[in-house]
Image 1 (cartoon, rainbow, N blue to C red):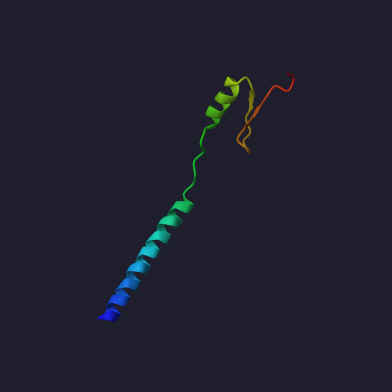
Image 2: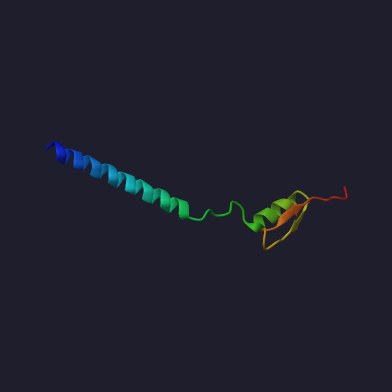
Amino acid sequence: MRFASFVRTRLVRLSVGLSASAVLAACATSPIPATYSQAELKAACERHGFWWHPDELMGGYCEHDSQM
């Protein structure tokens, strides 16, 4: 009786551990979406009086007026 209880406990712990590992692995492989779109970043940049420079590699950047 004691051995069966021990085996059952080990199986429960193993299944919980495998389930937790599967959940963590699934979350780690999902892509994280961008917080703001390029259009939103451009609008915010222009709203503050700066210039937006689109860039396909880096996603664009906001430049302030260096002549001021």
